[in-house]
Structures are given as structure tokens and as C-alpha cells.
Image 1 (cartoon, helix red, strand yellow):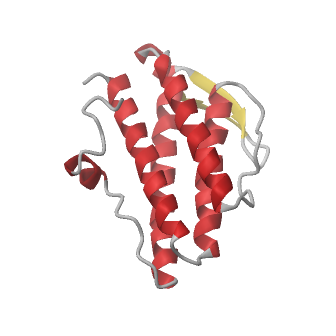
Image 2 (image 1 turned 90 degrees about the horizontal axis):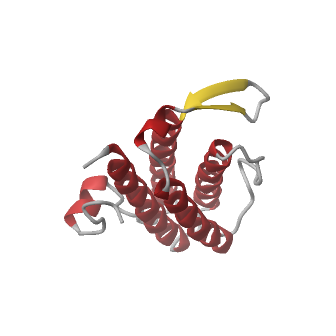
Length: 158
């Protein structure tokens, strides 16, 4: 599998895991989990906007309901597919200039940004799982290997 195919598969997993997480958050009363999920979604959208040289649209810690999170997840899934549709392997090394939420200027490669997005989401899904357990609920089982074993991902990610 080429690098773009690999990223498609990883982002398809991310989308699946985020949707599984959303479903588990819906089953509990855990405001912390909702806040973390909204942040995870908003941050992914923010990084897409940065790579497209667009201004930040949403707060990094938005006060979204679960229905708003679901809507944003739909938009995000489409946006990532569109981003990857025309991405060439050499573009992964493109340096993106941006200003972070604290006003500091940085440059990062597209490859590093996508890696960050994936790891950031996993980190927060873990926090969401802990918040759900603390609320007496059962979190989603979002391990990558579980998604593969259950056939939740195509071999190529589409």
C-alpha cells in the first residue's frame, strides 16, 4: 500500500473510532466526555483549515451538543476524503505556515500534521473512555486492530 493509501486507511479508522466514541458518549451522562469529543472534532477541522490556508472557524474547545458533534463529524469525514483525493505523495513534505491558538508562528509538514491529528484524536478518545468509565458507562472499543478484525475498514481505506 502506498503512503496515501495508508493515510486514507488511518483516517478512515479515525472517522470510524470517532463515530463509535460518539455513540458511546450518547449512552451516558458525562459532560466531560462531550467536551473532549467536541474538542477532538474541532481540532481536526482546525488542522484541515490550516493546511488549506483558511482562517480558524470554530473555537478549539467549542460548547457543542452531541447532535452538533455528529453533524461536524459528517462534515469532517467528507473534508478529509476531499483533502486526500488530490493529495500527491510529494505534497506530504510541503511545509505549512500557521499561527497557533496562542499566537505563536510555526511551520509543519503535511505529513507531521496528519500524524499529529491521528495521535491527538487517540489521546482524547482515551480520555473520553476514562470519563465514561467514571460516569459508570461502557466506552466504545476503538482499538485499530479491533476495527480491522471486525471488517470496519477496507484494505485500502475507501
